[in-house]
Amino acid sequence: MRKGLVAANWKMYGQREDNAALISALNAELTEQNGADILVCPPSVYLEQIKALLADSNILLGAQNIHSEESGAYTGEISAGMLKEFGCTHVILGHSERRALFQESDGFIAGKFTTAQAGGLIPILCVGETQAQREADETTDIILGQLEVVLQHAGVAAFTNVVIAYEPVWAIGTGLTASPEQAQEVHALIRNKIAEQDTAVAGDIRIIYGGSVKAANAAELFAQQDIDGGLVGGASLIAEEFLEICSSYT
Image (cartoon, rainbow, N blue to C red; front, side, top):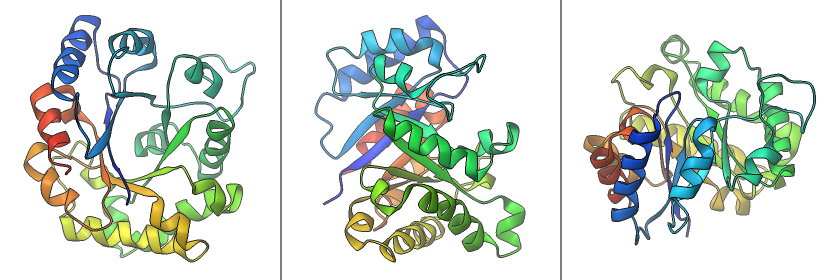
């Protein structure tokens, strides 16, 4: 049976005092969260602080991005090896904000995927469609196209220890949320795509939902057969809200 994952993506938010208060609240309440693994992905400048705060915690530490190369003259970038040295277990790749704002292509993201694994990190591979693409009935083509590039690059066996995050772009930071039925439909689509190549991998892979996940909708989303948790943005910065989301996964 798949164990869930609830991941906090802090994006470009955080200050040391606020970080300490948030992690303290999470540590106090998440000591026995058996339903799902809990992951926190802060901005990279706070990794050392958060690592220290999580020293006696069962909460995992992740990052928001890496470069596709292991090292080199890439000013401002961070490698998988650096993150691993800081104690990170996971890294978010292909987030819609990276795709849209930084023009990251499917091929570039596929390169990051294999680099992350080579560096000992578990990729959280994000896929998702825009509102225009959904309205044009292109959701299936977009999702499977983004996934296919990584499958061709890395092979289905590489998905044995991977997380896929479905994040409808139209539901990120907009207050809109895919209905549980809409989300389940796409999650099943992703799992079936992988099952075409390896049913065992498809059965084990965790597929989480990201798109305005909040306490009010988490339980209904997590109850869907193929939704194995959430990638939580703004709500993960509010301790009470994030704790309620975590407790919604049973």
